Image (tube, rainbow, N blue to C red; front, side):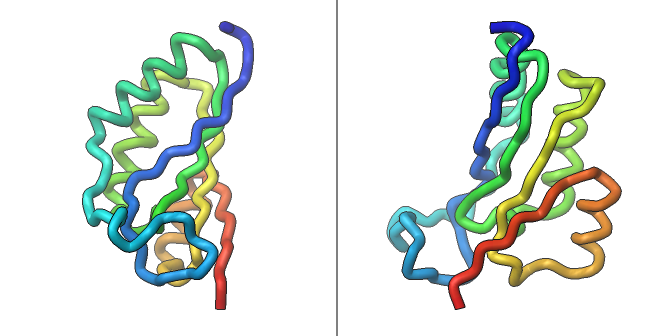
Length: 118
């Protein structure tokens, strides 16, 4: 219904750079493909048709295997459909975080969640 809020979990890739025991993605399910921007745009359009506001949780695999250029593109798509902005959280194992990625997330108001099995 319009006027309601929704949380959307997006998996930009099923690939991962580590092999945690708790992961429910089997090795044979993994793929190094990155979600196509047009696929994401279709998703955002469907979400916008039913909800005034949304939160996107970027999950995986390891979502930080998608390049920063991917996130620049998807945030641009979000702004076209949600000019007031969307909430975004990247749920990562943290191993690929660096100053550049942290600054990118900070400047785009992206929350970072870290779950890691040592």
